[in-house]
Image 1 (cartoon, rainbow, N blue to C red):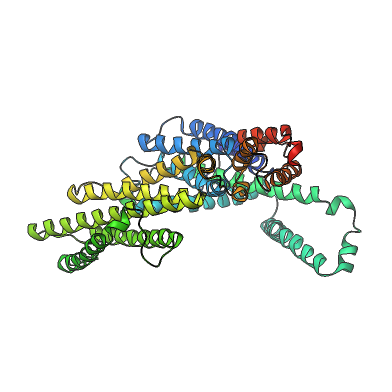
Image 2: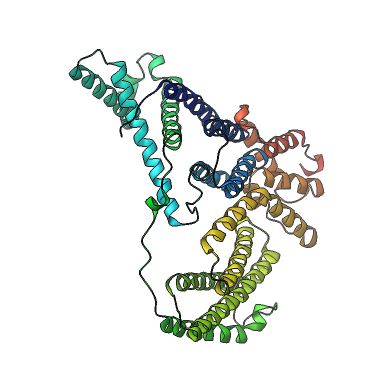
Amino acid sequence: MDIKIQQKDWLFLLVCLGLGILAELSFFHGSIGVSYLVFIAGLYTVVFLRFRLTFTHRRIGLLVMVAIWLLAASYLLYDNFLFYSLNSFIIPVLVFFHIVLITSPNKLRWSTPVFVTLLTNKLGEGIKYSSSFCNKGFRRVFKNMDEQTAQTVKRILIGIIIGLPLLLLITGLLMSADAVFQDIVLRFPRYIVQLNFLEGAFRFVIVIVLTFVFFGVFQVLQGRPNPKVSDYDTEEWNVRWNSVTAITILVLLNSVYVLFAAIQFKYFFSNGLQEGLTFAEYARRGFFELIIVTLINWTILISCLKLIDEKRKSLKITIKIMYSLLIGVSCVMLASAYQRLSMYEAAYGFTLDRILAHAFMVFLIVIFAYTLIKVWVERLSLLHFYLIVGLLFYTGLNVIHIEKIIVDNNLERYERTEKIDIHYLNSLSYTGVNGLIELYEKNPEYPQLENVLAKRIEWVERRSEGSWQSFNFMKQEVTQKLQELEFKEESR
């Protein structure tokens, strides 16, 4: 890539260096808490200043940005382990999607596979730009050297960068394999092998890598001509399915589904059990089977909508009726699966997997409802709606504090049945521990509860983090409650 380096590029590189340092401070010093919001604030300050508040795709861009801020805020407000891990991947993807989106032409449709091509191209261009910038910068720094000497120095530096991590890894493995070798290595001066030195080198590498990632991406987005929409046009999909064949398949499937629903109707919407099945077998087996069938139906439906283009009016109306019937029986199956899972929860308690399954079924019903509208109003875009609803759905799961719903429902169930799985609550994050404290205040005599809380107090004391990056409201509140918890003398 041929680039021209100006003074302002060096100044912006310093800005990206500050952003790289902020990222390292935010994400590599213990668990993430308020630090994610701090980093997002710093990143978008650079974005807004860099692009001077002139953006495209404003409506969808605003929606994505709000989602990013809400997901980042979840690290401060809650401590759900599942979303903690998922968001560490999803937020960076959304941020990259967002900054490319708001710097792309308005005519470029973001809800098409074409936009994925644009994203990958921009990432590749950013890496190439940083590489070219480093090469030109290297030549400028060593411009007084002859070409052969400069190339030699360059290759030595590359060898050090690649070889040093390998050296550290191999040395560590050899130290683990041989005690004598380990003893010899440990006799070197402590400042060479001590952890702080290695950690400092590791952090320095992270800062440099992040700096050039930010720098390269921002540079290929700013000051370069916007891509023409035609540059990303794709060829028309030539694969087509025959409508008569599709109608035949849909008639066969719908016939089975309608018959199945008619025969099993009393089991779908009543508490009756099929003969030979226990309550657990009925609820769990029926749930998973119905969900799988529903997903198969959705796949068939989307494939037909994409690959069938029937012009004859009679066949077109027939296939739309078949689509509508398929959506209807799929919603019946989702409703049945929803009820089966609710029955299982009432008997065995609430867990994260079960609550997420409930939420996913609601999401599928919304998807099917819009798809039904699309069947009869052909101009609507499915992918556009799916992406927006998917983003809202995932953000909503983060915002509603799903673990608190689980704890509250289990405590409410305990009030009715006096049954609760304290070990499952203990396996949750600090929200589950908060539920155990509430349970202890209601019934300090509950079997093993005091031992579980005592072990949790020891665990919290061992893992106490004083860094500002890890601050979290829920963690702070529950830790304080544990410190103030007094066990009842009579329960000892």
